[in-house]
Image (tube, rainbow, N blue to C red; front, side, top):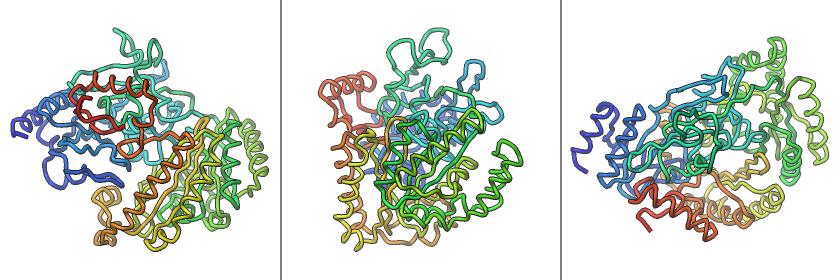
Length: 526
């Protein structure tokens, strides 16, 4: 890499957009779980579309690969190529471009966070169908669309990808591609339809097909009324059975399940249930009336958090409706389903607080005592969920002795996704923390853990468990988000599907410079 390239990039939007120092390069060279074979040559942070397109064209022409990075919260090697590469940091490309209430869409730059998007819609009476992941304080819209994502609204409206109308994408040679109706001459990004769905090609691609510069998302009326419910269960089978029935009945904008460890662990790590007056104030303001909000806040305060450990498993559900009567009717149906699966009603503090403060600091990237954390997941058809969960639980139980020796804790998370079920085993273990953890959580909080030694044997066992869980879930036909370089994708495709994908990659990125290796796609032309 010559100084000429660096000078050329600095000319696009100033020298401050270019970082070549070791700390910046090291931070970009790992995610929550994986590390790149080598640090990026540099990190470039474009501030507008022109500088993004110009940088991609110049970097790839110089023979380097390009790896786009949003909030950096991947755990599957999503932005960590094995080749010499440059990291494109999209965090400064974060403007809200347009809120169009007449045609019901919002357009934002790819580095805009979900928290920024939500703030832009405050007071409009409108919302995106998918409201963002739990990590929305840091997670970017572009990152969520590259990895695909779920949480707020996903039980009713599906994933992040399903809210997208149009994209603006920078290809490997620097060309700017418009998808959806924005791809037509003199048309606005109001529709995803109008021909073959080119937008879908760049969703869930982990940056393999191009760098997303902006996205247009659908807008819908914000819900007029909300309701909340939580239920405890003695077995994971009962909990999963209740979630499946709730999904089949279309009940729950969000519906997730946790075990007692995660419930109490979450409370110990600064969960919003323990956030005090600020949280209660947010709940009061979020109520349909001040009085209702104050009553709800008082209920959260009185409930405390001790109840979370009473049952081995629990589900927490938020649902939306056209009126309080509509919501009450739906909550009654939820109660019937939970009772049929031996569920016991709990205070609904968890979903209520999540709605009041949807995006919180990402304390969960480490355990409450600084343990490392990594999830692994599969998205399953409803008919396969129970058996898949049963087999994964048996698989993990077969490693119980080894896990005990290395202080590895297993804790499952489950969640409803429109017409599907997410199962996410999580692992916690004592190990050296990384610069990304310090960057997310801050020096003060992480100081006690910064000298913790590496635990290579424990890490290797977690990797083994991770892969065995994936294999088990895939035997039941699971698909995955955050595919990156960790989840098998290309090798699972049927031959004709694989050939088409490889041909599209070859056309869009003939020299294999765009995030090579992601999705399992070759770094060089086939």
